[in-house]
Length: 358
Image 1 (cartoon, rainbow, N blue to C red):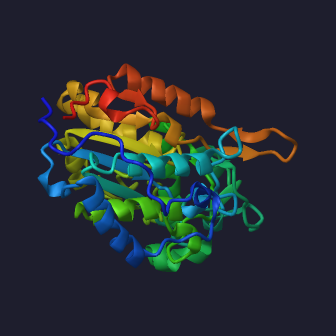
Image 2 (image 1 turned 180 degrees about the vertical axis):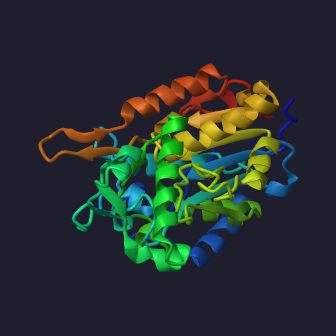
């Protein structure tokens, strides 16, 4: 059972420097040194103790709250059906951190991290005439077998020592494994979260909140990087979509260390982008491990349903060329059926089911 909580569970006020408008500003970045100074005042004013003294470990997991996902200027803005999805989510996440700063022990932010050529980017592929492909299309095993699409030969030298036959077999194997698993087909996304780009950075309003937490509570600002392997997707922070190559050799591995970190916490609170993809996959993988270990552990997971949105792709005519809202909603119902808690960031956490705070 969860241990008693020594940190005050009362909701804190929003700090005076916080401006909710920053949740919608691509260019906003906080002054970390000023935050460090403000944190000392905040700690003294509200009697905030170090996170290391907590007897109840509440771990907040923020998935991919990066600029490319969180702003219309980003290359893969998660607008949801409302059009302001990720912006509203960013504001609510920041305010959740501020109000519950005394109860949150650790915050981990995942960072989708990509390079120019990866299997889910158009740059990796060409069509049967050698022309480049565009984003927002599915590639199937049959497409590759029929020669409708093929890997870009330009990548072979650095990727597989010039062995194009090997690469062709590998991409067919990859699509076949995705289709067999039944979670996703290979979908081509526009380039996003490229390492070194502005879009890779965390949304400024969330970075500000996590740094105040770190400085006020003496807690590290943990980050989990994912998504850099050129031959597999990594929607989930806990594992890539495909683990083996077509020749049986390992392709990538599970993030066992971080999985154990989450399982050892007394409560895990999850928010971020996107509800239909990276959030969904991360929770799916966490749930799979819980089911294999002890299904009762699902009760200590809290999903902030008002702090995540689904991917939508506008069609330019007032509708959507792609809308993954139904997938996100179905996933959340599945999580609830397994025993996880669907909660809202605006509800007092002391009133959340099963969460024992003193």
